[in-house]
Amino acid sequence: MMTALDSGSGRRFRAETLLVRGARIEGGGTGDLILEDGRIAESGGTLSRAGATVIDADGLVALPGLVDLHTHLREPGFEASETVLTGSRAAAAGGYTAVFAMPNTSPVADTAGVVEQELALGEAAGYVTVQPIGAVTVGQRGERLAELGAMADSRAAVRVFSDDGSCVWDPLIMRRALEYVKAFDGVIAQHAQDPRLTEGAQMNEGAVSAELGLAGWPAVAEESIIARDVLLAEHVGSRLHVCHLSTAGSVDIIRWAKRRGVNVTAEVTPHHLLLTDELARGYDASFKVNPPLRREEDVRAVRRGLADGTIDIVATDHAPHPAEAKACEWQSAANGMVGLESALRVVQLAMVDTGLLAWPDVARVMSRTPARIGRLRGHGTPLATGEAASLTLYDPAPTRTFSTADLHGRSRNSPYLGRELPGEVRWTVYGGVVTVADGALLDTPGVRA
Image (cartoon, rainbow, N blue to C red):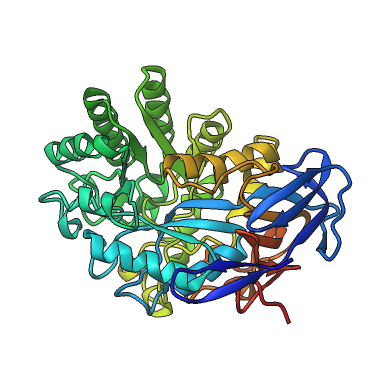
């Protein structure tokens, strides 16, 4: 039996009936899954279906398709770094079936027209659901609110709004944004960075920055904005999400806010779970990012925060740049790292192999909860009968060197090149359509040679 996934732009991809045999469902007991008509038709012990394509998943962990709440796809305007198509391919290669696209494009995604364009580009690509994030303020300039209601009512049905890359620094505008999105159950995702405290900042403020003579980015610049915003969210009774939390103090503030009952969620990136500011000593700009890599003490704190549920999700902050933006002196280099293809492998290294998270927790922080925060239907659902046939089959056993061959986007600015990482995404299935087959990204979703 064959079905079709409509990309929304006249392009259709064929979906086979798939029998996933012997997978470790979320790392637990083994079971079979039959995927048909974009759904999980059956789940259980030993299953069979005449004419189905069999996927041997012995030893593989089956996870619901990963969802990234923080991805920069750069299109429209910065296609030299990434496009919706190339970013979607990178996402599928990393086990993702949905990504939320940040609005710092050109033009900025601050109108219904731009977010609908991004949605259509994602549908045409067909690798993942591309859900646009709308800007909080016009042009992300922090001066007046963007068309939040129009973006929410558009075909893109935007529910997450952010000026990521810039902080919504004006407390009155932040308050008004939090009040406005309550009407349609939206959320403001804040880039927590006091601009006055980080003028000219080049890396984390601390012993290493002092030794290197680089201007420091102090932890309090992040923590003070988070403290202000959780109080504003409590005052107006709205939802707040904190992007790329990176310091021990920030974890403490989120923990305190949750104990008070504030409706706040927070994310941490894979690189802040693993890498430290010591890497800046070589002046290698692949390690330059915003917020910057922090101290070892901060890495330990954010790991604990993710393990105990203070931090809700892992989000990549996938930020592609062309080679020339990184192949220069540190002070002139762009901030950002690509991270879609490496995220699950880094989470295994930092959290699973250390015993801080089990595979059901990985499903929660990399699929279920990001989908819930973003109010994205059809993703993050259990691997159970009747649910969406979007899943990742992951092999945690191998360890190999991460290389440019692992990168499927347009840019190569990964901090993990040449580093040993565990694991490998073997299969990605998006709505019943295979996008990664036996470790190989397909040139066209659902079409294997």
